[in-house]
Length: 603
Image (cartoon, rainbow, N blue to C red; front, top):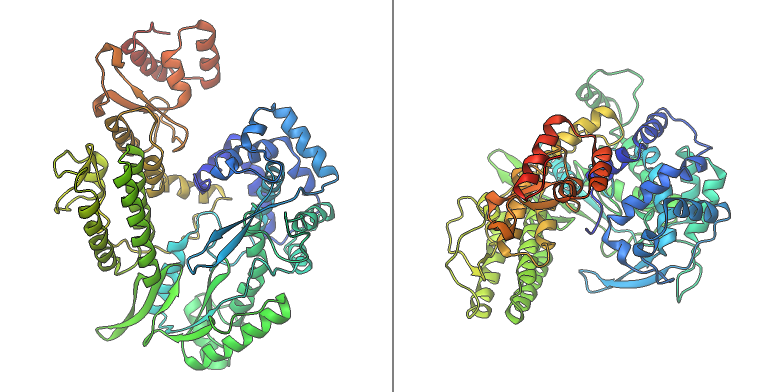
């Protein structure tokens, strides 16, 4: 996976008994506590093992650093060897050099990425896990980037709400010049100290981490490397001060009278003060300041420009920074184009996929279509379908995405008709996943080797939902809401399963595997526990040798240990697995039923 999901990390925290420690850090940070003994928590054995588990689940772990090592090299070490290595290196920490790579951005320019060595990534993960709950308690509510349980949808929903309900139709767009490359190291460390992170030993380690030599360039005196595990957290720490400064201008301004309702407080401020009404919506270094009038927007534009320069030593791009009247022009944010249009007697937010993103989606779609024309292997077909699902999942929260996807679909369908003329057919049976996802879509279907092609044009709008304050990774009550949300299978999991079919299995098997994971809600049939999308088995109830096939009714989703128990024949192996799982009588009965069906004796 590109990243470990927040839900997977949450389960990992619980596996290693770290959740109560993280909860305590969060609660104390909410109360303004100062932390001067964090180093001991970072080098605690379970924290190190948790860091390894989280890194292992990330595909970036297969990327080499300057020492040429990947997660596989650490995987061969024992638990104690890994723990000893981390503790030894942290005693007198000197970071290894960072490998520099460049990736192409949407605007045609290159974005530099810094790839730390695997052991440095493990150390960064240990630090990140302890710092995250402390920082989360201090971060502003309208910061949405690289934070647990928050995503693009919440940022867009907030902007929609401010346009529709609060009638904030002037937006200040601020573009910081090379933000990640210009973060002041000294200022960042002071901001962490102000947040309560006052362990001097830890701050020295972080200071050394920031000054890790970049291969081919040298030792940096400013900036945080994009690619480091802690970099997103550090970027939020830097700009959190901006969030609260803008918020204190209006939203979190403290009045002398304790108003019970926020509406009463706002009315009083409007009547009796000259404060500027403004709200920030931020996703990492991309942010908007929403204002009710042009006058307020112009004042905030000047104030923010000066504040960034004086407080954070950051400059803005004059060409890209501007004030937009949403009644007349649209503003782009996180791949969307937003405008306030007339509807009846009021104005409402209309959002579309931004034009440059439409061009990029079509171009990448055509590349994948061409790839299938050259090689129509199942893997390439699955890759195209996962691209369609991923694109639809991200952009379907735009209010007018249907029109955009219709245009994109038209271009791709024309290309498909030309390039796949000799390899595609209109005859076949749609998969269960297709029927669930595109229910009611009546247009002509396309198949390649029995594999149905997902239609890009068949995307319905999903209302962007605001982030709920009740959802919180670091409180027992907040985690209940998270567990409720993950009972069903997410769009991300569908995409992952489509991209990662089981090699040397039939199309029918892999398609039914996805459908079963959805039908079972990602739960193990025997244990009744939620499984991770990259750590489950799809079991054939009747083996192939006994006449069983890959049809839906002959497959079941189970945990890997349960699968091993079903097929185990050695009593020693059976006893080891039973001791590990501690199954109930009902669960053992289910296992025995499966064992008999594969030709094994009951246990």
